[in-house]
Image 1 (cartoon, one colour):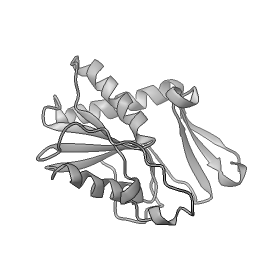
Image 2 (cartoon, rainbow, N blue to C red):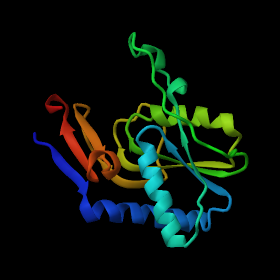
Image 3 (cartoon, rainbow, N blue to C red):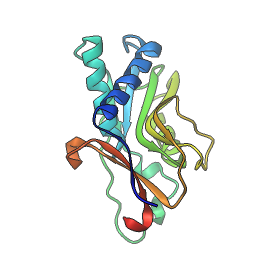
Length: 183
């Protein structure tokens, strides 16, 4: 098997725009909604979503933040003898009675999302929580978690890895399906 480019260029941009239009359908002006990117890689998608929403809605502010889930993971004590290096949480609001849109780049087993659901409780009790992902690896779930908004659903096997590259850090926007033995 060879590596495959699943999303890049104009299709990458159009996918993000489509996700934003779906969000606008359900959240209108975002007056009671917040977008929260899950550290580390969901933050890039959340930032892109927020920028596109500002442009589309012609507003200066869409409530958003970044959430670190390191110490809420069920495997954080199993990372070997190396000290953990958590990312930062940047949320200057509470989520009490708000509609929360959690954002991550890839949904695979569901464990990251379960951790985010635990972590978000530190900021209040949301009215509703939705999940937006760029890539949904549909048939690999360990937990009963499903996204509300999906950029690209894919079917893959466990020996494959989905790699999302962002222009901000990786010089280009693309989604690759890679055979793990070639990484």
